[in-house]
Length: 117
Image 1 (cartoon, one colour):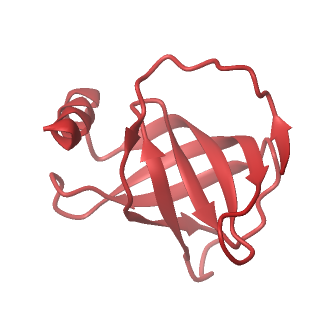
Image 2: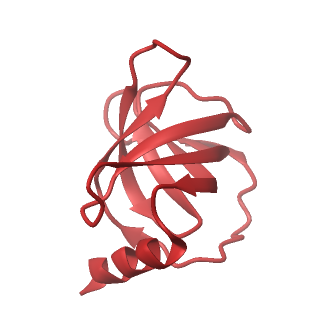
């Protein structure tokens, strides 16, 4: 397995195992690229996809959360790339969330805590 990025544990938020469909929003007019979350936190996401995304790339994501009618848009940065035995040509990416539009931090926190309930 090859990892890129800072492998030191630098987490400020608890991670929750949660699989849901998200989309990478590319340039205007381009089709969104579907991806899957592996886990989520208030500060980021671990996603899995066949799409190659460079380390340190800025990304715009569209995320479906069950507590929100519609999709949440988030801006993030790829902070970790992990290629391993995840099935097929899938790669896992650690995404640090920089900005989230459409929900408050309190709503997001309530949702994350509800996953454990």
